[in-house]
Length: 490
Image (tube, rainbow, N blue to C red; front, top):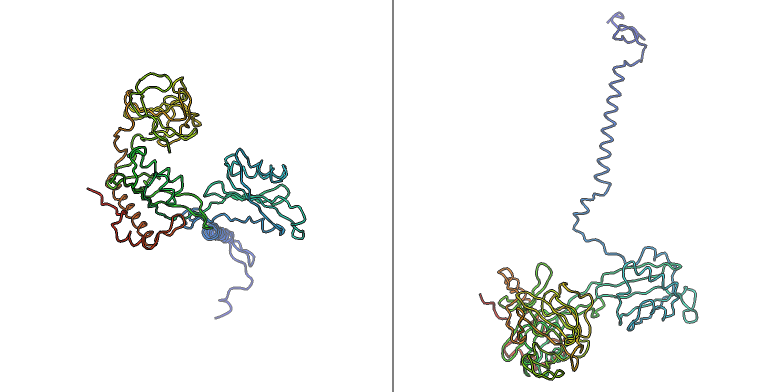
């Protein structure tokens, strides 16, 4: 190759207009193309960086909502509590008295009014102390600096804790000068099951109490049977009572509250009345017999607990007026202040008083029925005309207002305005289960029978019941079981 065929050295680049550009100069089109490529590359990298940031770094709210993990329980120890200086702490437990208040209790325990007010103001953020009742226990804490002697120096009020309801615990702790932290804790409870099996010698109440049942559960059981059994005249010595019930205990193995009756049976005059508890999908529970009929009736036969029938329905001589006339209801003698229950769901027609009946309430029920409750000492709070009441709701208290010789409840039942004898009423069941309900009932019956068998196998040596001897257990196992659950009829 000759030198003529090589391009001349250090020559410029030809421009589109035929002009020569200096050596090393880039054409405008190339600069624009390079800027365009750079801009596109920068935007692509920026988009990629944002996508990586949102997908892998930032939390995804939707993923958190779909997580199956339970929410973490609140810590019993506040974060700032760890930063507090160590202190000597002691506590004492005090009990609220009748007509007492938490403020009065703190004052009585020597706590200054300024510190007590600051503590109560913090407490009101989660709980109204006016809801505390007599008998409420409060544990009060006192603290001293670590280098001081608690036995010779006066300590500082450090807070308190209390259990206002079985499933709630409130902790109030002092964190500084008149500043307090508060924790509203949910107390987990566990159910335990017990069996009461008693022969009635005096009354159903005494038989159930002697078998370990709490008074509140005994009242619920009596109310359960009161739809079909008249406890004033039907109960006989030798009748048999069988109850499966639960109690709820806290983590310290202490009884927190009474549970529920799961099964109850009363053999009265050779006839067995047995009912099982069934919880419905709406959260309510009811009792049914083995055929699926509800034990609940439109009206209760006895709307007061522990009363004695003192006067029957029919013609009688009035003890005050002195002449004979129709006694339109039943009289139940009971101590003044004994609660009176609404015999059925209904609407309040009257809450008033009269010369003869004194303070009385008239309720209107379905199917043309009305009930009257007379001679009350006082009405329950919040009652007014046209308000609704539910069966078993306390509506008043036994007294002797009006024409009365002693404290008692006068109870009337009227059907389309005509007085009828409450003891002879034969009302239909309130509800009957469908096919799905019967299947659920059979499951509840099988569960109750399994628990009863398990308790019997362990000789029923639980704390709330008297221990049976081995001989009595052998006799029970040899005899036909009274706990046998009948099969539901089609």
